[in-house]
Length: 204
Image (cartoon, rainbow, N blue to C red; front, side, top):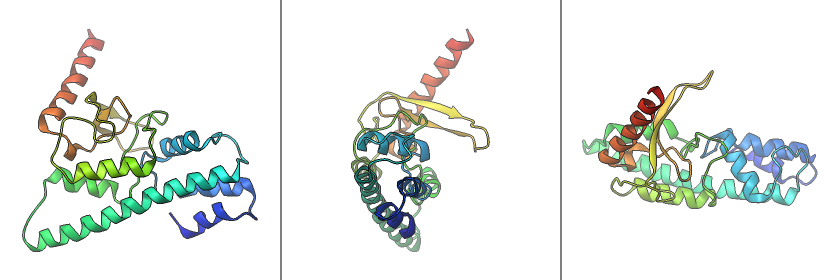
């Protein structure tokens, strides 16, 4: 997030409404769950009324610190990933297409653990969620959500007005869109089958 917006959140001389606005502006640069879901998460964790235009400044600072800690973790991961990819390309090695594509779409950390429902997201600190996600990205694919270990994963599709259509596996436990590279082919097939059966039942 920009130095200016973070500084404005911290500035005790600034109007509280401006400090709150600046915190929301930070989410334009880094919002792991997406803008609305990340804002809902920060408000819930730090006792901020989402509609309060003059919240407690101590709560705003705590929310900013959580966001900054998570962003530092993600940027460090991205730097390591970029260096690793340079070495692999130099050596003629290629990663699976889905892995490269997922990183390209989440570069910078915006929507890296996207939550399709803004009110359903992990309750743990953002930094802890990203640590779990990074650990999963560095290991072999599995059959459960890398954040909450829930195996209830369903394939969902969205076509929001004015936005690009999206489809992928979503954890029914914590609500994140699970990166496809961390799931086995069997887990992905099962997620699609669950959706197919649900659509068939609705059409019956």
